[in-house]
Image 1 (cartoon, rainbow, N blue to C red):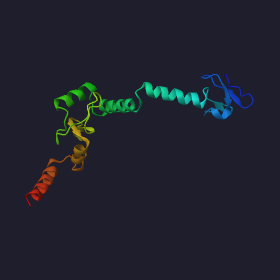
Image 2: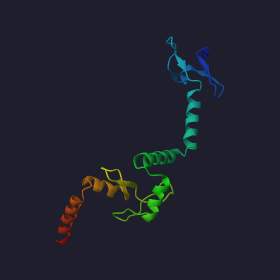
Image 3: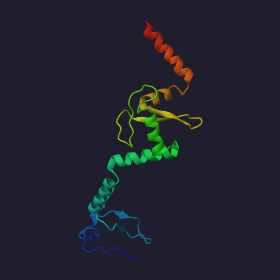
Image 4: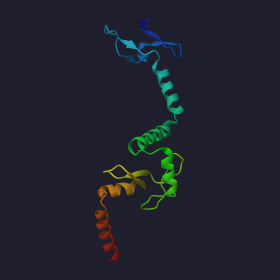
Length: 159
């Protein structure tokens, strides 16, 4: 086992090559005998490497796109191509309010897009803006409740 040697309270960073105080290194899981074990890179180098990885993967937008892609593929069984095709077939608008909806994969701007699906079968019905999707969800995806809400609103518009 190759143990890191502390000399005068300092450890050698294998990334930048500088001897730094032990406090500049994060601890790892201890050795089997209980001795403290330290990371090979100082905190500054570890942080710089983490930022570089983050930027290489597209930063916040890259994370957002990759997690949305995972959701599409695993929850809705849609590929990015399927999603983009649906978006194009709907002419980039919500199927209820007809307001523009975004496509994160082609940088099309609009309201946040929700994949509407049947909660019983999992079948994808279409793309909606988030407010419309939440609205029908609040009405339990029940067309009769939506009809009654429409009738209620319609009655008040007549007055």
